Amino acid sequence: MEEIELVQLTPLEWLGDFGMSIIPPVLMGILFYVVMRGIFRADATERKVYARIEAEERAKREKASNA
Image 1: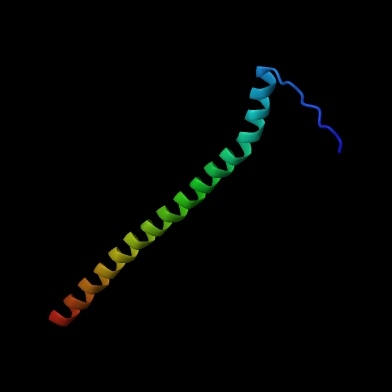
Image 2: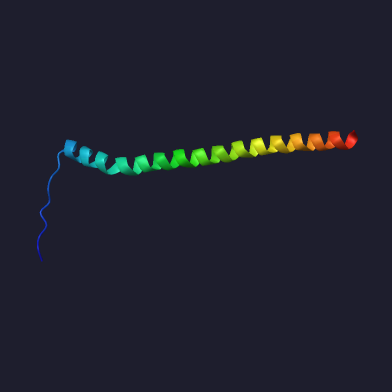
């Protein structure tokens, strides 16, 4: 079996490797958060608008039935 040679990293090299390894998952997490937040906000806005339209239609129907 072949023996593996261990390489000693300086603290700066270690930090560079750590940074390059952690940046992609963090960026994907941020992107996921932004997309999901946009979806949930759009849904909430749509529900508010739909409720307002429903209330207006009910008021029109009630006004028409009373006239």
